[in-house]
Image 1 (cartoon, helix red, strand yellow):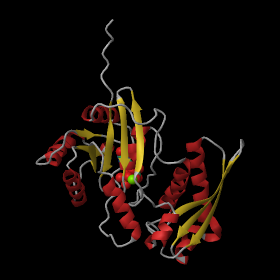
Image 2 (cartoon, rainbow, N blue to C red; image 1 turned 90 degrees about the horizontal axis):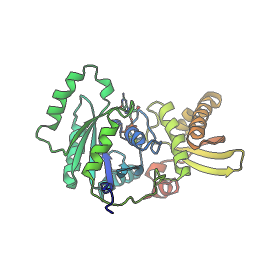
Image 3 (cartoon, protein in one colour; image 1 turned 180 degrees about the vertical axis):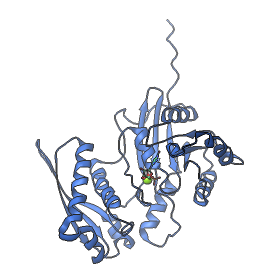
Image 4 (cartoon, rainbow, N blue to C red; image 1 turned 120 degrees about the vertical axis):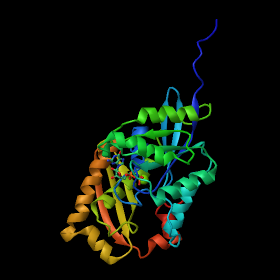
Amino acid sequence: MKEVDTPAPRTGQVAIIGRPNVGKSTLINALVGYKVSIVSPKAQTTRHRILGISTRDEGQIVYVDTPGLHQDGKRAMNRYMNRAARGALVDVQLVALVIEAGQWREEDERAYAAARESGVPCVLVINKVDRIKDKAALLPFIATATAEREFAAVFPVSAEKGVGLQDLERGLLKLLPEGEPQHEADEVTDRSERFIVTELIREQLMRQLGDELPYSGTVALDLWEEDERILRIAATIWVEREGQKAIVVGAGGSRIRAIGTSARLAIEAQLERKVFLQLWCKVRSDWSDDEAALKRFGYTE
Ligand code: GDP
Ligand code: MG
């Protein structure tokens, strides 16, 4: 008896690239349906190459989240992020260049050039369409953005509102080669729970502090202890100067308490477990330009 033909599954890796703040991490989280990568309105929020895996009946897509490329390659941290960003274009079958609806800046052009240089087919994802009040303005914008540039497809989306994501996913699957899934269906990322927890704490650091601390803070776990009742975590926020520590701690410890409370709630929601979180802030001068300190704080490929 002849079996019913189901199309062969499609699989592959898709690098998500674009200038800081266009919504790359938000997009990956929405596509994967799990927060694999932290989000904030600040540049430098994503520092690592992080995989987000989405498995559907039609196939499996492995999204590669990336820090943006940094012009200043002097500090060890920037070199680390640049390696992570460049590494993202290796071994991928597709590149998705993310831009913001209504804007094409110099930095978008540079990201596009990097995609072209890689020789990998590139699609254009126009994010934040929810911000465009007059939807009719989108068509001429798409026309100019794609004129004289080469894209395999164009997808207007809102990662935050969940608009256009199904079409995007279907479109990407169509462009990927046939192949068997490489990851289990319930696997959503290559990163450990512990990594995600330190990132959720750092997310609050990015969100709750002004521009005082974009590059200078990082988070390291000191304790991870669980029983049936509760998960106990202790972590240190490392900064580079006493003045930064004073900002993180705040008057009478108010700031670090607020960071701790929000981070604990985010960790509890993500891990679906009751959490006790203790946070400290310590100074290690110039850790972000110190290769040994970077390694110790988890900035290793
Ligand atoms: P990345 O630096 O490219 O990874 O950007 P993020 O994912 O960290 O997002 C940067 C900022 O844009 C955050 O404040 C997000 O909440 C916001 N953002 C992301 N996607 C959308 C969207 O579809 N619409 C709107 N209005 N904001 C978005
Ligand atoms: Mg990001």
